[in-house]
Image 1 (tube, helix red, strand yellow):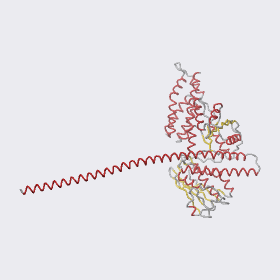
Image 2 (cartoon, rainbow, N blue to C red):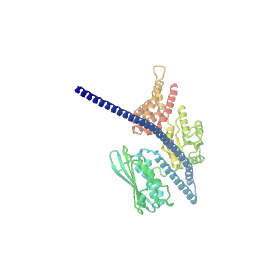
Image 3 (cartoon, one colour):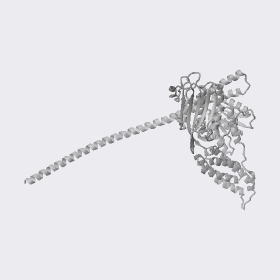
Image 4 (tube, rainbow, N blue to C red):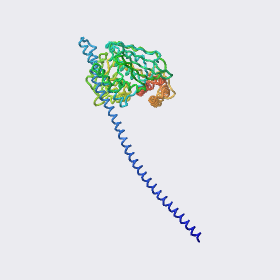
Length: 565
């Protein structure tokens, strides 16, 4: 009996222990569930906060984008607004210098030119700084001929250097490749800025340009550029802050020297953009050496250096070939200036209009050798007018008329818009008589009329009869019409995407097919595109693309007439 009681007691204790464990487990489960519920609530709250933050971040991002676009639009507008009157001032001053003047009048014109150039430099510095801060500055990679670049800079700046009583000398390492790859414009800008600074703070001394090869491998060369002067020098304290925006040394801030303190900051930003280094070595009272180092790509081939002085001293009064120009500009000062410049170049067949609508009307009524089109005009701007003109040329199978954008807005994005609209080139205000002359010469030569067909070949084909009712020429023309538009579109895609090999093959095929039918002008376009693609420079072929379809349509129309005859 006692054994049974003992067993019962053990069972009771076991049951009690199990019950206690179950109760504790239940309590632990409830605690875990409660903690999970709390965590879940926190997670939901966090998700809501995250969603709210995402919305806030997206709104902030969009606000930044809108602000950037507004800033870009502001920069574009203010650039045009500043440069347009400056173009009038500098242009008219240049025209005055070319006319008979007394010594006192020449001095007055020189003051006007110097003041306007200084103002233009200050505006350019502010615009460059704005573009750099907004991340809108883009490098324009291309060929860099350092010898030609240095020669150009020397010709440009030597009169200023001599005026300050200084001597300008150049020491260029002969082992540097003739042709390199980089942004020639920005390298030139940096060197000009450093040389002008050196000249400004040096009197009756020397400014030396030194270009040295630092490293050389199969595909690149590291080049060190130095601008050394014997001027006032820079204290160690000032050197530490010299490349900051608006920073000038104590002596540099004096009215004797002037400036905004932006030049060196812009130089540093441009060198950084090109993944280089820039610095200065100087002692107060003992001159300075500003230097920067860039790694530039090597170009294939080792072409000889062309003389940079071939065009120096050209007589601008020589009579130009017969050229008719349509000038579209809403600013009366600029219209008068450009007409005077054109007259000085011997071009008297000029029609001037004040907006895009008038430009289109003039284009429809008369054939022009060249159109100078302002970017910003009322009623219809230059871009819209250009698109309309290109559409008319395509519909009416006209040869394309060179259209040159003329504007004070020199931001790269705005240049791209001009090219996308169908313009052929870009001339930034203010521009000199020499720049305008070279631009007209360039596009007048390229726009000389070319025979649409080689009539000798066409007549040979036309004289070959077929067994059927249709002529061989008609049959070949139908085949050409069936295949060519599609191939032109394929060529366009390859050029735009930069597929040089495929573009070369398609351009060659189109050229051969066109030549076999006696299509002369269009085949020359295909040949030019083929050559650019072979050289790996498809981008240079892009301006030719817009001329293909009008040339194709003109060729087909001419062949159709011959076939019917």
